[in-house]
Image 1 (cartoon, one colour):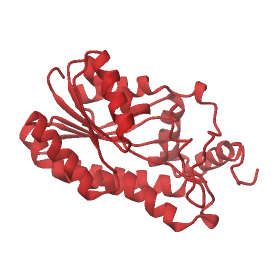
Image 2: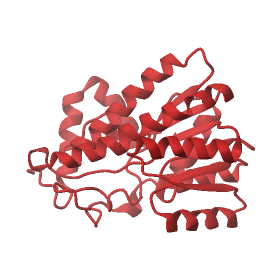
Image 3: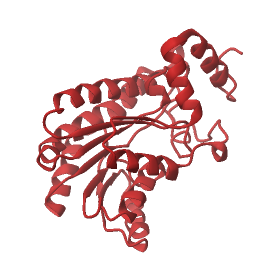
Length: 269
């Protein structure tokens, strides 16, 4: 990946920042997007301290204009694009019966349509470089989670979109990778939207016991190198993936029990 140009959406924290560090330490030059200018500048300084060349772009993932601008600015800066990592995302936590549908729209706009917008804008350049498109999904992308209806829907939609795109691009030399981390320590649960659209604030899970962003980044980096199309991470994630194919009812019951055990889940025990 030396001297390859990698564009990462949502690159100022969590998995996105870990991806920037991992690819950067292996010689790639990094363009990344973020919503907050101060955090973008802090990220650029952090990456520079590690000897990583980076270029931060202020962009809102749900904005088609901003997503296309991110690609244009990356091309203006570097003249090529080798890897696009669709990482920007937001979660939610509420029972669907109580959910303001504006929250559903917002999650879909960021997680799904944000991926669609920037991928289409980047596609001509990725075809030219025979590059790679990555979608950072979740266990919720192959097994619907109670209390996470909008989030699961957005990740299922992302998977369908990118699988279809993989087929379309199969003779053009562009690889499409879907990555499914398990529960990962990050700010996504703190920023998760509640039923009225306000941020959750506190995570209901023990973050220190989860997969770390650096491990997710390492596995994604290796999968890009190997031109894989699909990776499921963590033992729990792999078990869920395979058992769900043959025993979906059993997995649904186990998933319900796990999610209902979260403080304030709203799910009946």
